[in-house]
Image 1 (tube, rainbow, N blue to C red):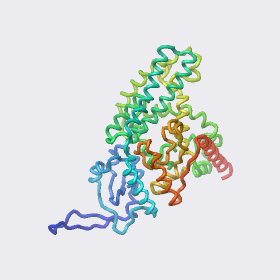
Image 2: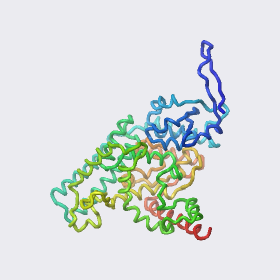
Image 3: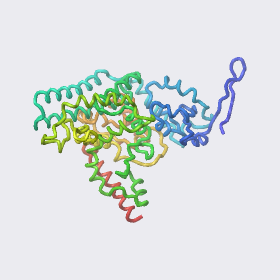
Image 4: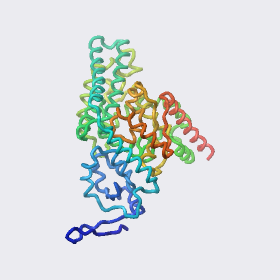
Length: 458
């Protein structure tokens, strides 16, 4: 039960009663119809408001019963403005004798991380460089313009088709990294501006839904590599991941696919990945009852713009590339069939999975923000090519710790993060790009072998 107290004003009359709660009481309110969370020692009941949360109801629900201070600061570029939405939800505070952190977390580590964040803010590392993002968008548009000129002058012959497939695959991959920046509110100071440009980039340039992406991706950032909370590790029975899930599946004799071969069929599963993402983002509801109609306003201009690049069915390459742009299109023959986004899908899948699949994947352990992100992410060595090729996702650690930080500043905060990790013995993993790709396959093979052993012998 929460304890109550009163504070007197200058006139001596009592003000509103303050309720105090223990962590034991707060942790009980973590169900689907009962959600409390703590931000800077203040207790909020977000049960009714969760469905109106702009980031989706699941991401805020994942923090129910916990101290959500660091998650709150990580996702909001103007916490002071957001506080006005929290004020009506305030129901009390942590009792004076209660620690600020739940579940015996290292309070000094948490405080030092928050000091690090304040240092990064003082260094202006959360301020974006407009020139960087202008040039980045410019090089994407330049590639599309070049593709238009080539198909206008040279048609869709063998050589032109191959060149166009490389150009448009590259422009699409880079547009994918750019929409990621706006989706994380890391470019403009105002959230609304980021949302507007995000819908343009992911909609007009990619033909996908901004709402769907935000709803899933924010969950991933809040609870990376946590089963039932991170949608990116919910592989729909295609893969078993980590060390515990394979054994559980094996003991229960679950065999949706031959998981001991998952490191081999991963190469095939990568090909249709983006097509499925694009289709689901357009058709599957997320935090709303129906798909966002604005999505389709971006969807049709995207396909209309790409129509000149359609390869005739008589062309010698359709069986390999499907379309010159090689990232999926509604076919002329079937109108509803989805072709594989062959080249870009592999680029997208290998880059996005290299930082997470080889890391710890398990059930919720209620770690502090720094430890949780470090256990689930790793970095790839820095170089001009790696930065460009991965959209700066080679700095996955810094990106996960500070998701609203502009990517061109990750290298500046990296030494501070490494120093803090060294102080507390938190493992900071960094590897070459080639090893990151090899580790994906090795991790899948290890998990598959664990499943097979449990399936046969336990």
